[in-house]
Image (tube, rainbow, N blue to C red):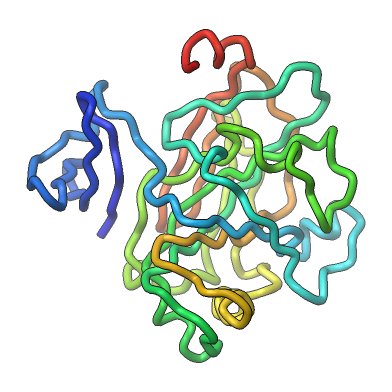
Length: 257
């Protein structure tokens, strides 16, 4: 089952999607055809997003780093989140902005001090994100600063959440990124250094995880620059394909602010 959140004719609807791409709202039971041009996809949830740095061995090697011995985790604000088919701003006068296709784990219920053996019981489902980075401002891969990772619109997320039980093995999924239809990045979640159960146990050992919180599990090697006008699609096998378009600051300010 897939669950999405959309804006349609000024109202927000959230519910499950059938095979005909029709969403049935949880409360009103109104049916929304997701193929309609009037539908705007929203991020499927808006809890805290925990993002992993260097969580694929091949990506760490790509950047000439040794694989970390402990998870490198940073937070992303809700201001960064945007939905499927939305836009992402490439800041003016930067030299290098790259995509990062990531499997996202969505926490299904509140948890604290969870063991690895029990951790998967607290997973509600999975979604996809594109964790864009502005490399011009990167001072330290172990502590990416706000100008690198926390800009408005720089974390497209969605299109939906797939129920946990519909993904047989989240540690055996292909991840891909396409730019203007060209395959730029391909890897597999087999290469994740810190597993999903480990990350849930690690985080919940010192803080409460709440329903709707998200863990973006990192990206494999294969990064490249994206430019204004690029159409970028990130895909996680069995979860979804998330699309967005890169625009200028001026375009964003004139259209969306």
